[in-house]
Length: 341
Image (cartoon, rainbow, N blue to C red; front, side, top):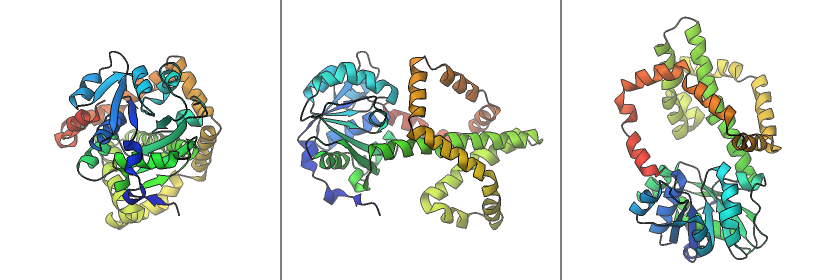
C-alpha cells in the first residue's frame, strides 16, 4: 500500500524559509500563489511583459515581477505555464538565473519526463501536483480543507527535495487531504493515459458515437443528448462519492444488469488492446514528440480537430437545451472569476 502523508508529516518551515516564484497565473498559478501567501510564504508571481493576468494577481495582493527577475530573486521556482511553453521560458528566462541550492518545481512531469527541460546538476527538481483544478485548490484551502496532491523527486542535489516538496504541499493545503509520493514518470504517464483513454478522449468519443447511433436510428437529437451526455453528471457524481459499487446500488436493477452485461461488449478486448497501444505511445515518447511538433508547426491538426468538434450536432443541440436550464451554469462565472485564468 502506498503511504499517504498528512499535516503531521510536513515541516512548514522548509518552504517558509524559501523565496518562491510562481511562474504563470492561470488555474493552478493563482491557487498556489494565494495559498502560499496565506500560509506566510514569501511569494512573487512571475509573468511575461504585458500579461493580462497582472491586474488579477495584484488585485489579490500579490507582488508581480518579470520572469527573469523572479528567477533571480527566488530560490524555489514553481513552473505553472502550459506544458508547451515551459521549455522556452526555462531556456531563455529562468535557467540563467538558477544554480546550486535552488529548487525547480513542477505540477506536471511532462517537461522533465520527456527531456524538454534539463536542470543543472546542483538544482533540486521536485513536483507538487494537486489532483484538482485550481479554483478547487483555492476554495478548499479558504474553507479549511485541501485537495490531495502527488509529490515526486526527479533530482535530489540537497538530499531534502522530498521534504521540501511535502512542505510546499502543506502550504497549499494538500496535507489536510493527503499527499501521495510518486515519480515523475508515473505521474506523467498515468496522467496522459487517463486524459486520453477515459477522462477526455475516451469519454467524449463514447458520448458522440452513442449520440450519433441514436440519431441515425431515428430518435430525437434532444432525447439522445439527455441519455448520452446530460445524465453523465449523475453517474459520475455517484462514482466519485461511492465508487462503482455504490453507483450501481443507487441505480435501478434494470440499469445495473445492462451495465454489467452490455458494458463489456462496448469496452471489448479490442478496445483494451487499443488502450495498450495508446499507453505504449505515451511510454516511449511518441505522443510527446507528436505534440511538441504539432505546436512548433502552428497546431494545424489541433485547430482543425477543435473546429470540427465545435461543429458536431451534439454541441448545437446541447447549447439549445442548456439555455433552457440556467441552473446548470449558475456557478460558472464564480468559477471563472476564481480561476484567475
